[in-house]
Length: 68
Image 1 (cartoon, rainbow, N blue to C red):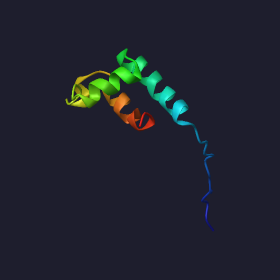
Image 2: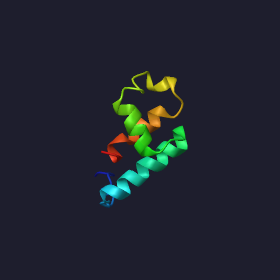
Image 3: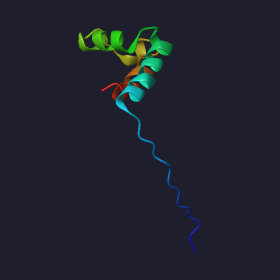
């Protein structure tokens, strides 16, 4: 006898704009920047540091796939 329970989480697709809005909100909350400003700085290498050295940067980097 097995006690395993099968669970399937619902999946909701979101548009690119909705996805970027999530990212933008995280960046604003964590770093006080817009998502676009963060991406400009990130692409220029401004955040090429240990993510733990900048408060909030780890959370933003985790959310980066929502922006691109």
